[in-house]
Image 1 (cartoon, rainbow, N blue to C red):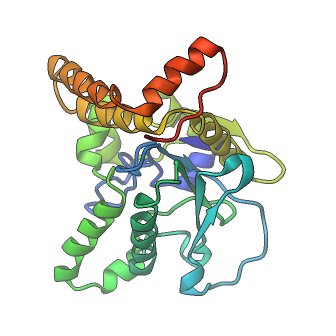
Image 2 (image 1 turned 45 degrees about the vertical axis):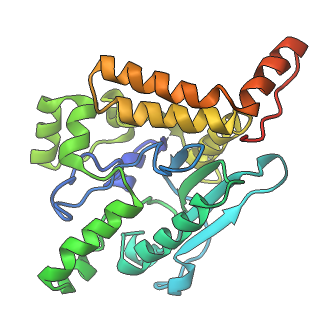
Length: 279
């Protein structure tokens, strides 16, 4: 994840919400930002915190404009940008936004041309304020559980009490969750919650530019290899090392009969860039 500094983490708030208010509003509010959201796709998702290019915003926006899906073209073909545009709600997660995210994710999962997804804010100064607590306050208690489950289905890295201790250790995780402390970008990077902290640029999209740069690094890699590597990492982190190595071996075995593996070997022999097709 890339965050524009200084103070960008405060703007993100729920940020990688394995942390901070991780359990206080959706079990407490919290949203963990990760590089592995698009679970069934070949490549990763890259989260770009911080504002997009500045422009005028009304106090409210049409609900159909709350999520903007943009397929990049030419040399960036295969990268899809999901722009969250709910300025009046500080990009908080409402029923409508989750519905739109779910629809977009389902469509992207079945699109084999999509290699990497970038999640960004199109609202200056904020990424996501977590749950829409004004809407949540109006929900009947029977609605809350299913709504949280829907959020988990769309953003499958939510789970502050479970994922945060795995990332930074139990002691520090308890400290952050119990105190609901908000970390700035440098602090979040120091404890391993984000990968990059950047100085903001004049356009206000430093984090997005970094995310786009990472996505461009991912594009040339083999889709099959990316898919199984992601599976091996995600599954391996949940088990002991011996079992994890067995998972890795099983994942590698899936690449052996593929055309992409042979193409990679041939390209190395011929000293040229490989031309992977995901086959």
